[in-house]
Length: 446
Image (cartoon, rainbow, N blue to C red):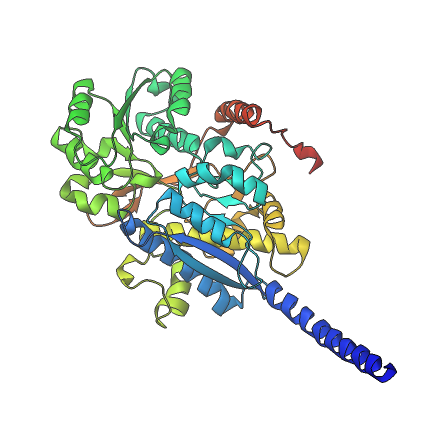
């Protein structure tokens, strides 16, 4: 009996010793990999946008892994789930991968969809997973005191309205010249399309222009009624806040009704090659806001071409998409995410980060001009600094114009009037906090 007990104890100790030897290795494997779920849309109505977008993100992640050895040694791993840009499928993807994969934690989730950002807002707050939606998302989530896990990075929808108005003011000779101007917004009749209305109303009151809003029902294949109305108004400028097929249809119909293309300004999501090429010659002169400018002549493109495209490692099947607007949207989003991981590692150590740590990282992200140049993103990204209270950061865009063959940048960075917009954002975030019973964070204590 004594020998049997002894043998049992020895076997148990051996098992514990073996397990003890395995646990650090497993933990180390998890710490060496940062998992990134990708809710892609390579098929369906928005595939022409999604294919280059995700290729840009994946090419940049591959560049970080293969050229830099990961983020301070932590390799980036990702898994795609096809969503066709349908909100229910994006939610399903989020639920499937929010806990990570194979021991590697999920630090953040790219929604890349304003409807999905709305739908996931409450879940992400419970799960402590930051939602990243550059130049999209819910505008009031700029206020991180109420929305700690939502980041409408770079340029929220109110900021897009303000940049557009400031650009028009530049063209007209000053903000005082806006008084009495007729500015029409033709918008996709959805939460996305309506998102700038409160900001435009505020800016119209401040500068004295006439603010006219005209909806286009999804999908926007027929817009004669809307553009006949625009022609009757005879506006000075028209904002096109459309998405998908409604953009080229809008451009062609506008020109057919006598609205000059160079008086049309597309917002961020109406300013890609997929928006102008189908419009043909009608699009020549069309302008669009570009927090993600098009072009492949930037330093980061030289690096990606050398290390990813030329060796045949690109996610692009058609390399003619290289440097196109949606490809650049993907790579810029990926670069910002990587810089956030670096920021978090500086505090928490060179290991994979969980959602709470990545939230802290994004709130302390500071990409200055020197860092932008070092990353090869000069001209593609404006300085970006976030905080507990400010989840947008930059608030600027360039304006690009279609010359019939390619996008040409016609401005440097045009800044939104963030001071004017902030009280409106805070009022909306306060209303959300009251509705949900949320106590706003005290950012000075963070």
